[in-house]
Image (cartoon, rainbow, N blue to C red):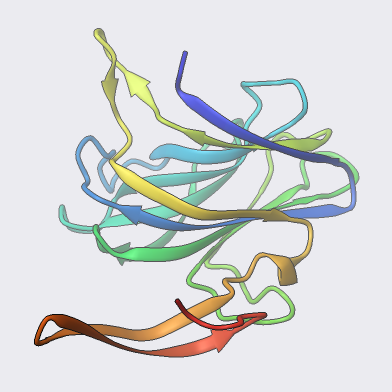
Length: 210
């Protein structure tokens, strides 16, 4: 239907945790579900090797507590009745570092989906901002999908305009971190040139700046 764009990776099975990290910038809030909606709209998720309907660790979005903000949440599987929301309001036009994780646990209805927004750099995962146990477990995970939701006749958008960049998929938390975390960045005009100044919070395997 042209709604999905997927990236595939080595199939992950029981006793594995898979992470997807990305930079998310929601441009505007047009068409978002209201803050009272317990599900919201989903914009990204994990899939197994074959199904296009069994979704895991959905990244959900809805309006924030006011009409000028939004919130992100995690829905462990498409069978979960509601989304677990990170209820801090986020600002459109601002970039956030977002990590979605899915722990595939042996057994039934016990996979764990986690969401982090702007997590601190660390060797092990910090406490998530939202977490939920799956209603239906994944037999395996092999794809990460970006989704443009649609509804109505003719089809109209129900997910916001957004930019997603720097997507990284790994079964190691240490592999998904941003190489550089900026604390500040400024540009001023000096005659016919532009003078840049910045400071960083952390740098990993960074040779320099160009």
